[in-house]
Image (cartoon, rainbow over all chains, first blue to last red; front, side):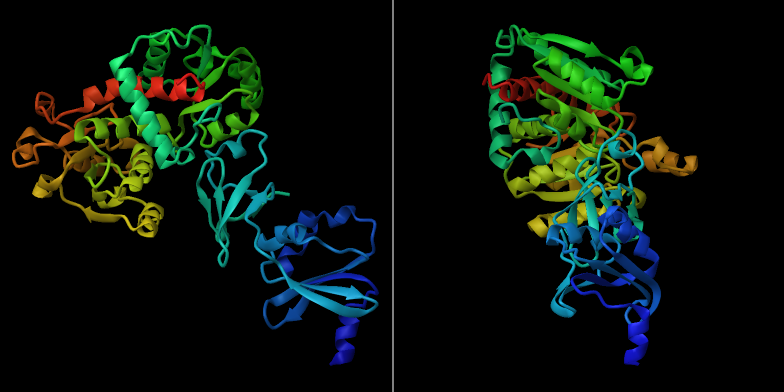
Length: 153
Length: 302
């Protein structure tokens, strides 16, 4: 069993492992965090078996550590993600993704008549509910609920 | 309030609302004075709205200010494809204050972010129309002597009517009781009921327009809009159910006043117009004093 886990994802010396990403949202997480522009070593695996999520994805980033605010952006696509902070092959800290107060420029407003869907305006939302994420647009004041959240970056 | 935009009724606290209403009273007593002399107010109406525009322009003119702008977007550079961003940035260089009506929701908030001068929202789609709310509050205060502890009936389209939603939120500062009367398809949205629950405001919902109005201090009538119904037969039926007639006012309270944001279609029968409880035309006049108060307060002149 242990052997099997090792085969799925190889270890890193120092850096961050983002675990428990829903497999279908792996590439959204990569886009939101801008990982495609990193110079660091990045490995990822997807469609891995997970008891919690069915199919999960995992991202390993060498020598990369996130500020809480930066990582909180993925709450919309990977609310159950867990961060393992690795130093010298050891997990020295585990973190859950915290819910930010505001979400800027990541999601689309569900209201077709909202100014953000017609002019070049970065969307801005207040996060209303911390359990089931609901976003209140700071422009048109309409609420985009979890099932209608569309990622635009 | 000085130099601050007014986009949403939430932008003003209870104290600030009271201050505007006191100022409106002052302007009602002294409507003509030249305090806006030398000031240029931009009036940008990206969609036509005769009543709101004329009310703003009348307010500015009575105070000696000048107005620049356009009355619908076909006569502006929007037709050349200019973005809202560019229009607002440019106009804010020419003016001391921008009054803006736009069909897109959130457009006024966006304009307030890119403008060098304060922006007053004169309606952004179905979202907000805070100067209407303030004039409604002024009308209520003037006729009742207070905003506190009133029993307010709202009738008609409670689902889509933005004036209803903003009025609810603003009046919730003053310990009201609300009675909502509407067709089941036009009931007050759940999100507003949640807000009222959180604030501990009492409200009751009714589908019949009956003698329960005998308890009302204010009846706020709204128009049921045809475009809200996919079935024209249903519209015809509904619009004739929620009609206020003079005979219904017999057993109502002495202090009752009937308000309507106008324009009306048939929801208030014309036989109500001569009843002393009908207040909707005076309400429109109050819009001028309220807008005088808002403009002079934002420009720091009062």
